[in-house]
Length: 376
Image (cartoon, rainbow, N blue to C red; front, side, top):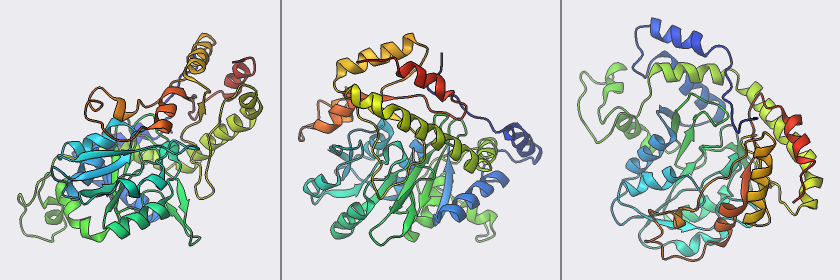
């Protein structure tokens, strides 16, 4: 059976973990945390980075930083993972869902402005499959309505957006805040793990305090204060040095990993195009303003029944492909509260999208040989 995902190990993970243990400091915010922070800030131009134990934690930090209160409204796509919504629900926010685009599972930016009210506090674009939302449109709306933007960049490491000004910017560097994931299903991994990026200086100091359980301990260790104490709300968001050491081994090999994943993606796309047309199946779309980071290759079936048949066929032939999100507005938790517009495109992706195996050591030719015999 070819699995949907297989974590790739570079060979240095155990070495760096052992080194972290030998330093005598494994509780976090040490040598390897700093290496990772510096890497991201220098490579992608993030103002400030803070590693977290998950992308969920990074999103929860963002909700705290924005001072989300009961009654505040936060706009986000319904086609996303539950953490995108949970982070703001935990602060008492009302979630306002926007439908997906007809050509891509990302939020439909043309429908955002109609959802804004006097209670709207933030917009949370999710860069599905590592492909950028139209950030010029989103940031313009946010600026005109005095809203914050939190990029859910869980899948978007090493992805870029080119704006109308012609400048290419890394995803996660455009909104006021952004959250990344290093879960084992992502391009760059640490088992579990995530990162908050801060791109607005007004949040920089407080983010570090929230990250350190509501204390100014980091400032104390830098010699900026003579003692530290409880100065704000916060939690234990920072990961151990063991997680950071694992991540550092991955970051050292980021270019190699990215090259291989994008190569697999390209092979899929080139070899499945004719097959997809003959079976009425749609392939991924990369808008002109976006780059492809090789995170995910997906198919959009004609109808739910075709998806069931294709998944069964692939499984019977040794390939583990999977569907993805269940629309959050249809979820058991939320559907009794949902009173918004019909989510036509979101529901279509929920019912028809299939994700194919994509990992560093993928035997892509074996997968393609199965597809070429499939007729649906």
